[in-house]
Image 1 (cartoon, one colour):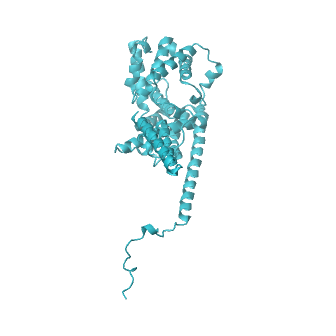
Image 2 (spheres, helix red, strand yellow; image 1 turned 45 degrees about the vertical axis):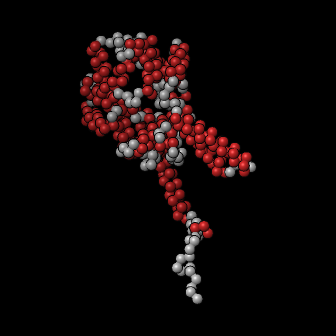
Image 3 (cartoon, helix red, strand yellow; image 1 turned 90 degrees about the vertical axis):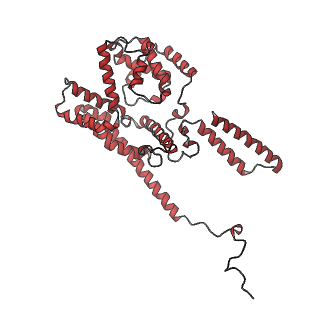
Length: 375
């Protein structure tokens, strides 16, 4: 708010100055146009999600960054009450409509592209998924309770600074959106335990430990063994959590751009606060392809390959696409390196500018070597 006020005040003063100069000099100097350009650039940054970090207000971020998606930068992080109510009304109006079989099948594919859908439509599709996966009957969830639950998650998501299982269960325990209210105490405890295990499994500090456990039981895996199923459950949620590169590039790349922008914004704030900078989030050290090639080689492939050993039919769905993604980012990394080398070479071969001092830079008093000799 204060920044916008400062922008408007500065713009008013600049326009007043421009008018005064125009009256006195008869024309507007180039420096005024340059100042107006900078003010306009400042305004655009204020309105852009990409520049919500303080550092983004005075550091040029265009070089080496990519727009996440044609829609992402148009959305504000926090939604107004009016916007939420409008989306809820639209969602409830649409929720009774029949979703085509084509869309139902589309939801099951890795090519599903969320950028094509509005918020209310996404909520309808989530309702369809709950129905098709038989969650409503399995957990005895009333339809109106499910709809209220989906709406509460949508409304509150960006207003929570961080998410954890306590927040998850707080949402589910709200009276009008308690999707677990018809479960027995024992069922509720089992579900809560499973959700906590899945959430903790996504902690990358536990990645190697969980993967090694899975590799150890894989040769004798028994689906009737609860401990084996629990490890598989953690592996499945891990694969789902980091499976973006298994999707088609036109779907996966906008998500990657969003993620990198979020990382860069965080590292900008860490620098401004004097905190240690998270290495893989530093915009000055990380590039888009470098962030992916190592991640695919050392994290995705080892995880996906082990899961495909248990379910061979998954290879075409998760391993082949990731292999293509690795080739794509490897070529991108090579291209960036060539561009960097060419730029360095051009700077070396660029003729040096004349360093002869200007007349105004010459000393007023002649130095000893320039003084006239005594007669």
